[in-house]
Image 1 (cartoon, helix red, strand yellow):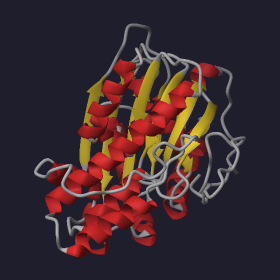
Image 2 (cartoon, one colour):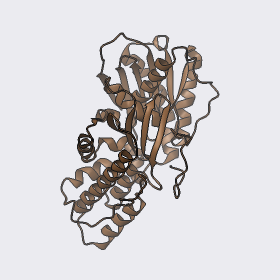
Image 3 (cartoon, one colour):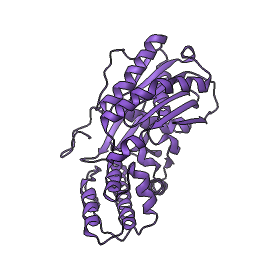
Image 4 (tube, rainbow, N blue to C red):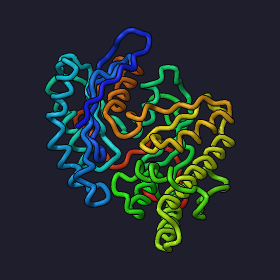
Length: 361
């Protein structure tokens, strides 16, 4: 279990304190964040050891681990900050999307705390937590901005126009990029979690050694597809003609090329944005960051990425999303305590269904 404390304070008066709870996948996380961008305390419990034997996240194991760890973590975070629930202005908990068992554990815990302490409950969309997390570390980032949201379960391009205001410009029609990284790691026998291990191995390989496809590159719409790329990695591995490092490097380069091509298309089809922002677990990948930074510079845009600690699933981003909600509406009395956990929850519910896309769109 890791305890993390960052002071990201910007000029301005201190405001609300929000307790955040995140349990949508395989990270149990709790944080206390203030409206002036100070992370008072944060703890994250990884489940890598529990899921590693299976090569991926097992939902039942994840939910059980959340249930065992969450209550003592909440107590520990409050103790780290030297606060009690009386000092907290609201409780923010992930209400979806995610593995429904884990989401329910966190949301029920948030409800219980809110009800016991008579504090507002803020049911947070996990994707909104990622979408707003760059603003936690960068007070100069204003709306609107172009967001590339890349994680294990999602790959989208969004126009972030305000708190709760998202316009989806593109999505994946099959798999998310983070999932493709994890699948590549599994094919190469690197273990779980796969993304960081593929990135590390790729540094030792030749990105031009293995001919891999760039799905949908050059297509008229800026959507993504990574299923074909995963299949090509499997065939390259099974052929026995390439070393693992070259496959990892070639896969990573193909993924980066797809991201750049799709972002170029989205930028060409929409009005200019002052900033290009990346968020989600894959935002921790340095090759991805470097390529996006160059892309932003070529379009005269600011490039913004959250600190690495805020890229992967964490509770600080959930608490910060709660702070954003309170700042938007100081009279907000909270979400109803009977609000339900949601396995799927699109940021832009009005977006058209993409032809060929599955439920992840």
